[in-house]
Image 1 (cartoon, rainbow, N blue to C red):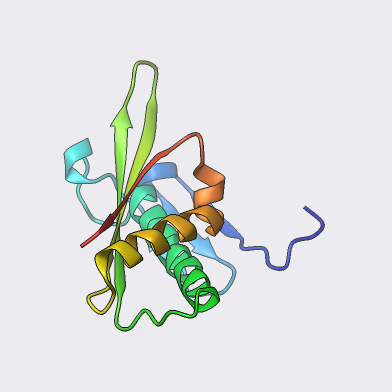
Image 2: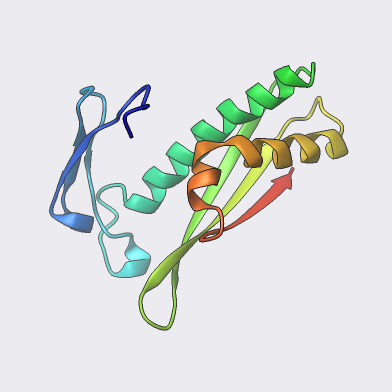
Length: 137
């Protein structure tokens, strides 16, 4: 890990019913179980934070592959949905990423999604362990 160009740090207390803070001072959140898990929805949760991080990182990768292909994305956005799924022994997650890029041809947009998925650090980190569905709106 000596080749890191940036290292993020977060300090969490209390698990899913606690707090998390980042060194930058911008991340300072209360964590709470969602109502669907018996909680009170009075804070964010790891899945929501993962969805935010993954979608932001993926948009960076998408911009990179579009620039490398000489394409302009135009106005665009990405919705990320992260599912917490109960399995036989514990839990796992699944992800759906949906691109809204109305100025792009749908086939071109899908190709860019696939290429971004190949280079996005979050996609690389989850590859082979998390099902990720890619969709163009």
